[in-house]
Image (tube, rainbow over all chains, first blue to last red; front, side, top):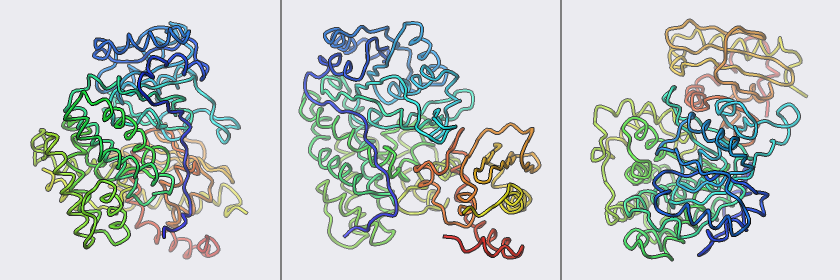
Length: 401
Length: 139
């Protein structure tokens, strides 16, 4: 029986609307959140796919009038883009935000909403619980304008999380803002939004989602609420991730992957348990060598699983639960379960055509020392299932290289 | 009841520890890798400690008003800070609960957390050496 935790909190204030054809009803749904003139936030590629036009039609059908479309968002958003987005909302007389895109788009909309509502600049709100509050900062956080998200990848989960990560080009660092008002009011999960997602991107973002669920479930700050989300997410990924990648016309699998990704983020980055060492390793690999986040997680995850599962019976048991949910071999010793689960993940990513080694995606051996320093300084290291020292990360990077 | 009755008591204990860390030959260079200026704003009693952790710069710790411009601001009860330096606070939980509020580039602070472990027994020893044993055995 699981122990009763000394502490955990759980929050899931985002209303999720999932189903086929839900984009057509976006106006009807977003009006319930008080939106009248949303600024549509998206990127140039999605603008060309015709998805944004469908969203605009969906808004009009619900008697909402799009204030404008802001589409100047690169793969990595920036503080400058956030300021421009907030300014665009003001100039267009918007009263709300509707993000249509992947993590970068959704995070930009979240951050721009804070600046739009409270003024100032993004850096004024950098941190954890740094948004304005009543009672000299000790009371309830002040609300921001309504935000709805239509994710176009099944990976990041930003549509139901309270954090946003934005690149600061000047400081060459990522800016984190996390606070309860940043939870989107509404997330619309419609397989139409991932219809044009390339298979390689579906595989990489799907592995990002799987890493969220596994690290959220196995970390020391696990919670019963988080467990429910993580294990169901893993079961849905087992049944749908390969199908969504191998047959992009499989609407059923794509829709289920959108749901799975939005479940997977909740234990780790929904204000509860945090993530783990695969993310700690992937963040510097992305910052230093431009390795796409999902690809890096996919490569690092099996090595971290082996390492963590050897950390004692309690940790191994949690990996056993993960293995059972994914349909991997869950019996045997603690080392066995780590090895079999890692092997299962490796077989899956190979089958989906993802790179297997960091050296395949541009990471050189001489970069390991800097990567180790970056991983040790990453917040996810503090919530990994096992405590790590620099030598552990060095070994993990060498295995992944 | 709060552990400290005045801002001076905070400076004489937590402040003294932070001053010592700034001069420590082994730990100070590691802390300076954070390359930042941190300000701790404590409540109950109200007190402020600002510390410079910058490579190539001498250690500087100010109590109360300061001319340093902090990049990271951490606010918490003085009791929480005291319990942290005794090794009794999980920082990630405290951040999640809002017991510690962090404004600015939080990763710079999280990077320092693993470095603080060797400091816990040192803080305890410092309190005992100063005759403040009532501050050692806290929940």
